[in-house]
Length: 427
Ligand code: T4K
Image 1: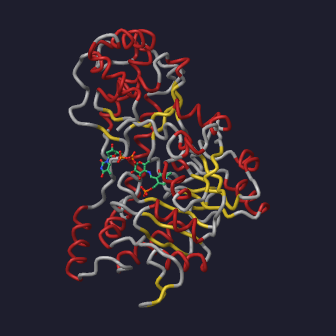
Image 2: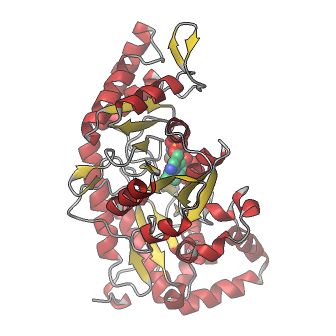
């Protein structure tokens, strides 16, 4: 049932009290998307002391081995190779899988997915997405295959699984490698099986902003023993023994401190999920029925980490645009993000390489104008979420007046700086 303005006690009595129109910001310090989830500090400090006492800092130490074992168990796979970050992990997996020529990827993803290919002079061929799940549209993938195509990289964006069955079937039938960028999907499942065991391999990110962090970090998981061994060597310069290399390799190793942080955070994983889920449900309830605002939903039958609270703003209904709403929130110290604006195909070097890519990406184009990600995670409390929702409701309920006030504002001196910020990516 639609929410009505009268039922809500507003923290700001009117739009004139919004910070963008000269009022006090609702929050003294910034609320971020992706503030790190941090487990038991004491356990981390104990591990840190142990690392220093033993003077074993990196190169496949005890904690990295333990972390790999735990990740493999949790993802239900035979092999896990921990790495320094997911970008390098993607690069190594791509190389180890023998991808060359062209590889099909979504444009609606973090730039690292595309860069990991282009870095190795493999052409990322941008494919459109399913607007419901924000993941690759399998039917369109099939249309993008050419004689140069060697693989597909699906991205389980926001932790929402790709159409794994369809992509696996296409890859098998067309003889393509299938890799999943599962940077967002640690702790999520598909048909009751944990993400990690699909395709030829999957890559997790344990960056500070991810559901589970190891400060910086990533991992490739796979059930293929030969592939796992190859990636193990590649991430350590290709060494098979002292003074002997087998392949070209790089330095993709995870260090012991990162593994210690990862292990510590794994012990609190259930708590992180519980807080994220509570936040997600609170946002969903408080913003329910708001005209022009829809929520990315998660499949309640599957496991999910609920790390991202993703709104879609339909500006035909809200009048206020997504970018205006973002700017209004930023002025209140709520640093909502328009991930993954403007789409990889509109970022360099891809924009110059493929100037007409947008013609084949209508759903991506639409979503990059609509998506807004709100602060969540263990650093955000329930009272803060209530305030954020109240501000959003105030703005949307008064969309027309708000839009007019912002336009008037654009002719005053202060405005031009706002106008500039509207035009530049959020920082
Ligand atoms: N594939 C996908 C689909 C990905 O999303 C990513 C990374 C990758 C691959 C590659 O994974 P890694 O190589 O990073 O392991 C961030 C992250 O840097 C990036 O890891 C992530 N995706 C992407 C979605 O977001 P930024 O530049 O937007 O985030 P940044 O640095 O502005 O941080 C977000 C907010 O978090 C900030 O406003 C402040 C807060 N923050 C950040 C850090 C690092 C903290 O409070 N503490 C911190 O330590 O890219």
